Image (cartoon, rainbow, N blue to C red; front, top):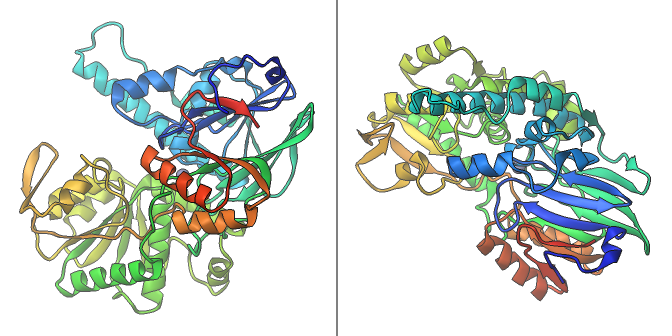
Length: 476
Ligand SMILES: [Zn+2]
């Protein structure tokens, strides 16, 4: 049974879990584990939503940061780690545990986030005509440095004690570089209780990363459910469609624009483009990745070959570059990006953001949206209200950057590149846990996705499956 308030005094000593973020939603992952006198936070993600609500939620924690003893991070996506500098700024003084690749990615991602926070505050202040009091950024580069100083890197598979009676082990989650499930052993009055937090789980059969490890057996499994009610398109079909769209574009002398998130999706797409070049499935045209952030992130990927898939390591041994070289060039400076914008095709440009609402892809779209030789290839989910979603609408024009543009560019949407498990993946991951897991709590999903997976898992014989609400607290 779940309740918001405990009337049971044994909860003071029994391991408990409180769902604070990404409960019945996908944003701001954050869960509090209390056991053996310790308070351990799992993830400290940034809530992403409407500006005012996001500011309010990200700057107010539902607990006292200085009372927390430690923080364990599942991976470096901003919705899982983006609010760590605020936590430190507000008094958290414990250790932050992360895998070695996650530690390196954190530095890149949080500094990029600090830049956005500072720009955001500046925009608000300009819009308010510098009225007092000035709006301060959620956090700054200095706050990020203080947060990074607290990070302790822990390799996969090494059991680590955060305090007497509380230990954890990271297991490969197969979602992005460094992503991990967290398996905890927590001492209670009735012995050791085991908790597994899935973090974000990758799809089966995705190349580049090592495969998702078996889910550790446990008393309580806290599992993501982003695509709990969906079956992704086949990956091999999707890759062939990507190559076909590029061939058609190149044959007519056009440019292929690929909007992609900088962490995870860009590396996957670049990897597929390199494989396509090597196999002769796409013509030898220049491939530009126009994003300093993606360049930094890809560097971290290259620095951790042991965390990547064996076939990628093999390609490196054969002398191929990974995520660069082999026809792929990263564009860092603004000047080089502007030059690229005016360069005639054919070529391929990968740039963020994934939904075309920010980043350098916007400038490339403006330059190329009214040329029928070009193609924009959307490789991720496009949320309602975004430019990406409007591009998909069957209209002769598209609205972005404050005006209506002639949409003569071809638009191709490929939805099979997801970095998240789908319903079949969940069933495959959970099957070995049948009879070896007490309860399952589905988090990190819109209500409809999580509930559908809950119904399915119950019908598959998992007895205690619930979708918790924010603030729900229960025994582990
Ligand atoms: Zn993620």
